[in-house]
Length: 310
View 1: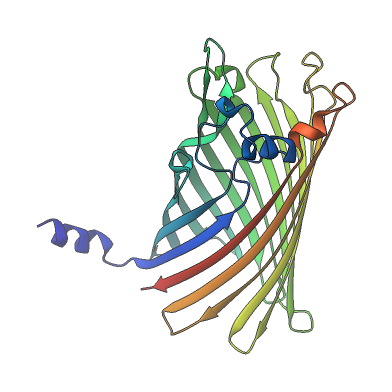
View 2 (view 1 turned 90 degrees about the horizontal axis):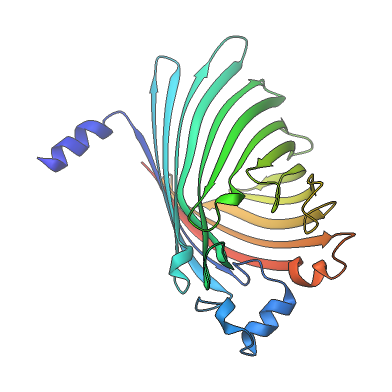
């Protein structure tokens, strides 16, 4: 009976299943100073997890249904960490896409993470290091224009980060605005450019993690025989806006990310992917001259994936 019910529900849906194994060498985004402390057994009460690095398995199930010009997309993504299992989390994503007129479209959607662990921290009203976690909700409206030569899209999002016990003062509401330009082919290359602005307002004035952030991405892809190759570079600049909290006042975080990857079909329904990512964050503050020793970090990530379409 249950199997029959599932078959009826899934009738008319396109199904895509992706599995991925990845390795990250700094999943908690710690500085070199803190990593050295961990390896040498210094202040171990700060590190109630098994390792700095970890292997992650990712399973993503996507369902798509088209009906009279409207497409319903459902995505469920589970990230499972092998060593640091508390770091595991699930992402739900649902959206409706509809073509309008003259090659324009509109899409509305919701993303939801019920629990995400940042790391263990010394929380308010707690005598010990406790997990700093939050749940996140993002509502998005996206529209765009698509022709043979290029596609242009823009979106607006409302993001709510709701922190759990001991860290309520970090609760944050944010607006995000973005634009993306994708050129279909220039000398057999397909470049894309995107920009995102984010304005976040925190619940408390001290600590105050309110900020404004600019993020740019350039991506270049090329198909050689049956394999799609891609390289992308991201730059971000986050400036904190508080006038009271000296730990964040005039603090600036800049980030750089560079990735290389490929996607190759094995059969009409099966494909494999691989990707390497290197990421670096640099932090500066006129009120905490040693903040770079605590907050700067480097991250490397290696990914291998398998996808099946049905």
